[in-house]
Length: 100
Image (cartoon, rainbow, N blue to C red):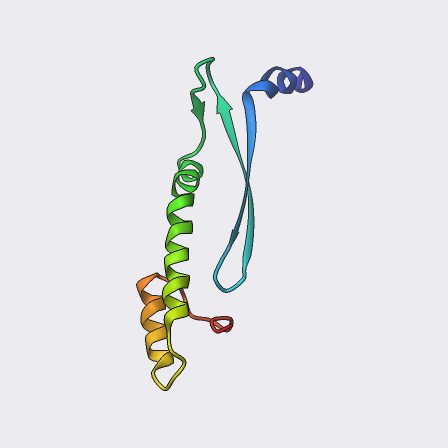
């Protein structure tokens, strides 16, 4: 019974695999599902999955701006102060792996 059901919906179901890495190095893997519901390509998934898909470019662009700002910092006596300000502006939590 379940085999037939899976075979029937197989052509309408697509997996979405995600990999996210935090600035501190933590890697999170995820798998979601997207269901196509008609021949026009309309699909159904969870809101958090759609948010991940639609925000991916925004998050990447923000991270690129963050890295550019971080790389401009002069490593002098005020470095840690300005580093903290930069991290705060981009909502990055400071941790052990900040300075490379």
